[in-house]
Image (tube, rainbow, N blue to C red):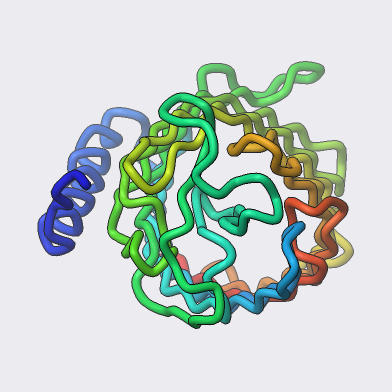
Length: 281
């Protein structure tokens, strides 16, 4: 198995990337916002296996925004009740042979080896992610706002616990946003190139997100989203999930809210729920 870099070094590297991004963003506009957020997310489902997995995710996010540039660093803590799934790019994939994933095929064939006891619960630091976006086209009367996106996943999670794959992932994509009075719409697509190891050998895959929200009052904003992608492992189901979200803006600086989610395929949890809060400086 490839030697894994110490977590402390990866943390420092991620912070350095964020610092460089913040410095570079100073050329993109005078209005800048720094946000700090956290949340609590619960999901349950069998993901196409014979065992239900309950999972908890507690992310801490640091974001920086200018008029045209944005960057977000996310550091998650993860708990899972079973070793029949592995977390990758914020999604779960089955490691159980019942879904045709157990060490079949070889390098480049989207296989994954079963190295975790299915009955064991695990918890710990997840994979840290860094996402940056730049608006190449500002919103017009008929045209949407167009953002190009870059993504990197740092292998800070322990792959021996099934909390991550132990490899770097890279991705790129595009996001479109348009405002229609009190309605806000957003579309996003990203192509991810995941790293491979002796335990996990995923295929390249797509992620997508479509969301609509409505400004019911100056402080209350309900919305709905549909997210999914293509399967990262041979024989697996593509993830597909819908979420109903409600956000409350207590002031210009503080917002909080929650969501309820429902999986629409075996590649997603059966049900999910979460709460979140953000403060802007």
